[in-house]
Length: 180
Image (cartoon, rainbow, N blue to C red; front, side, top):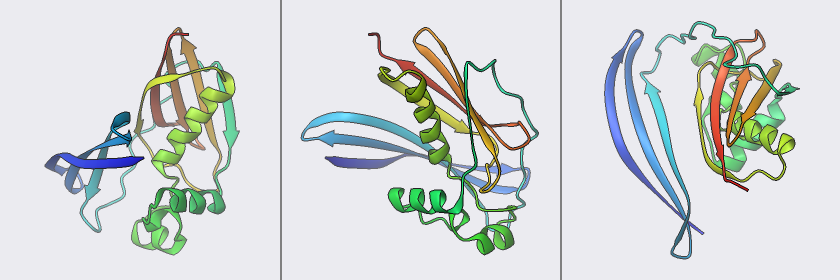
């Protein structure tokens, strides 16, 4: 397998709390010459020292059909960082996350939360074949605090979301299933 990653766009904006740079990455994974997976990833970079502003809480987007509670710990965050080669210190260096970045604890990786949401989908619909999946992080989830993974299916569309310890929406995701 071979992965080809390209920068699709770079956009500079001025936010309420400083400068932001939005980068869209396009990843293509080939097996031989066959394109197996195509992914687009939007990243946001903020200037150093910018205030850590958390958006206002939003409720769950729907009534859940399924739910799973968990409490991410330091081992899970460290292992996921190692697995994905993510060296951002907010996920494994508590002193850095709290003193330098202003978080109350380590930050759960957005892609880890998305992976956990997909896991919820497969626990509930083991025969599912996902044709498309997209997610958006809304609020940070923190190590050691409970989170709730939820979802519901409406035909070929599956809505998934994660709620933080206060019940506020932290991530929203949508999956489209292939017809059986």
